[in-house]
Structure formats: structure tokens, C-alpha cells
Image (cartoon, rainbow, N blue to C red; front, side, top):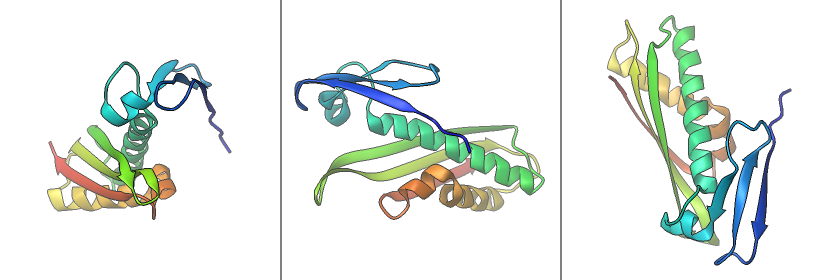
Length: 144
């Protein structure tokens, strides 16, 4: 079983403090983080939700690619975006929704079959499974 490790440091209180997020692989970062960036989109750096969006877009694209290949239609290209909504709700701030958008180049497949494969990937990718039951998810899929 593979494992992945991330870490963070934080200095100060929530509202005026700041920190850094890191990936143990060294693939990127460190990434600056702050409450203002997380809630208002202001300042340098990223947020946990942006990192989750990147992870979800990647996981979904991998799952969709696999599903299409299993059907005999390996994609030439998938362009995927995940938009994660974060805000106040019952019990405090939370991730409220993830909207996936994918545009694909897939030979020999019609729109309906592509949308069906995208729905299956949305439900089946490991990041989707981790968020299931807690976060509303949608997918907008079309052939390019």
C-alpha cells in the first residue's frame, strides 16, 4: 500500500497568523497559507481547499481515463477542473461542494457515453469516496 505525507507549520492565531504547507515528496512548495487567502482569496499562497481541488481533479481524471480505457476508448486528452466551495454553514466553516468539469478528446465515443463514464468516475475515484456523504458533488462532462 502506498502512503503519502504532507505537513504544515502555523504561526500565530487563526485570523492574523500564517503558515506553510509541504509535500514530503518535494514535488512543490512550500506553499504559504493564511486565513485571508482561505476565506477571501486575498494574499499569496494557497488554501487546503485549493489543494483538495487539485487532488480531486487529478484523481477524477485518472479514474475517468481508466474507465474509458476499460471500455476500449482510452482518451487522447482529458482537461479537468475541480472547484471546491468553502464557507460558513451549520456547525461552522466547511467544504460544501465540489464541482468537477471535464472536457475530453476520446475517439469512438458519443457524448452520452462520455457523460456516463464521467459520472462513474465522479462516484468511484478515491478522493470522491473520501468526500462522499459530506460534500455535494457534481460533474459537467463534454467531449471537446
